[in-house]
Structure formats: structure tokens, C-alpha cells
Length: 143
Image (cartoon, rainbow, N blue to C red; front, side, top):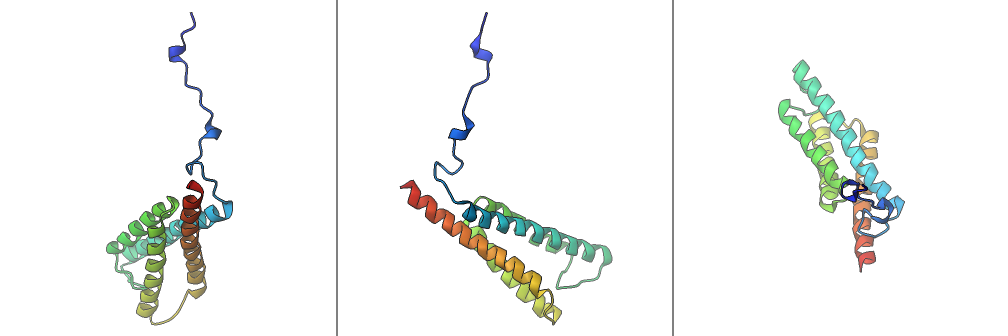
């Protein structure tokens, strides 16, 4: 007896488009991907620095201790939002990063780590550009 009730459903996965049938160029998706990966790296670096402050008890770069773990949570939240192609999260992360770099430079009294900061700034700007391009293409092609 051949009972088809218990056989798994057969679906062609290739026919289902992740973006609602709209094809987005890889260069746009790459900008978004590099931005949220930069967020993950930034969160890891911040977590490492906060851990050092907690362990040693010495405050450096304007870090104050466990309260700075909220920065890590915020950055991870923005990474998730950017990975979901959120323009708001991309803009917030760019503004947050620029403001935090300014405050760190001001608290330290010296400008250090400029090159690494510029690299991250570039990735966040690309994330903003990528998310806006994504939504522009998605809206234009969905019509």
C-alpha cells in the first residue's frame, strides 16, 4: 500500500526569491554585508576593551566598566538591523560610530587609531549607501 499522506512535500526552493522576486545586484548586497560584519568586529573589539577595563580596573579610552556593555548590545542590535537591510539602523550606526570616536578622541586627549576608525567609517558609509540603494531598487522593481 502506497500512502502519500506521509511523504514529505516537494517544493522547488530555487523558485522562491528571498527578496520577493526582485533581483538585487551583488554589489549592493556586498555593501550591506560588509557593514554588518564591521559591526560585529566593532562589537567584539568593544567587548574586549570593556573586559580589560573590568578585569584590570583601569579605565582607558573613556570606558567606565560594565555599563559599557550596553554599547556592545547596541552595536549588535544595529548589526542585526543592517543585516535585515534597515536604513534606520545603518544611519544610526554611522552616527553612533562617528559620535563615539569623537568622544573617545576628546577623552583621550589625543588622536589615535585614526586609520582604523576611517576604515570602519568607510564600511558604515557603504552600509548606508547599500541599504538606501537596496530599498530604491526594491521599490522600483516591485512596481
